[in-house]
Image (cartoon, rainbow, N blue to C red; front, side, top):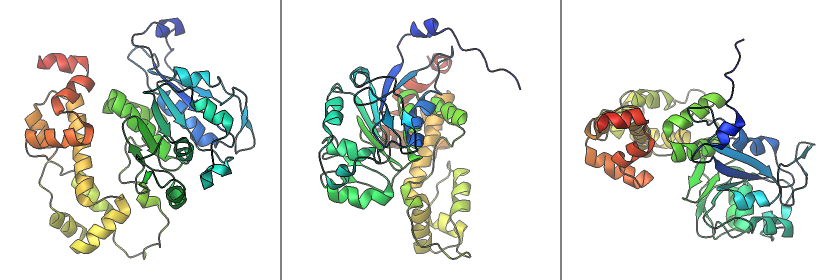
Length: 345
């Protein structure tokens, strides 16, 4: 087995400009080790061209002392609440040892005091039922959010001021992001990398973690529902076919015919399997393709729009502004490599 490339000296990385984005992960009593480790593993996979980390992840606790995980061992933190004050992003994994939050009770005093260290403007993130902590702190009031599908009804009853959507893998509400259960935390972290640094960086992190860079559909596909009959048809083959024909106009009738289903059956089954309507899914796939083309090629905006199936540059601009708040040209300037940007003048 060949040796891994040697990492650059730490001093050299410390002198990089800009400094790494600081992430504090707040470990609370009863934290599941899997979810706790997701931020360190995913964000720790992101490096610049010199091998220096672009994110600095610190695990902390509310008082700086160890906390018990739900797996029979304790977590020894690297820091206390001071890490929350220095963070650009604060991530709250789930906790299985605060039953008072299930009934809308107040946060334990030490947790409330720790959260008070967070600076205004810090990006706030929850993984799985970490959303209960953010909601108990009043940080999700009036905002869209998600949590584990199995606890979504309880979450909705306990915190009615939160706009709960249990059908998605994560919700990005700008400076507050929430993920669905367990492994959906990986999807959310990759989304954050994609938002911060672009699709190419997120794809590299996904390859290092051996996970898909993007999962089709949402949490709806994992919700416990009656199992269909073995002979029931699936829309999987049609989705694979559509991905190869994104540049073409694809109507709902065409997709249903390809799947050999009626329109009603196809639409219902597609939503059950993908967690969204066929139209929403097509738009999402076309936007992902457009972003990849903008980042990795110097094709004109018109040609990118054509290859991604939007038909015109105006249509692509409208969809990107709606989805990402940024037009194609600005997205390209932000996320494409310097050599490509230079070739366009």
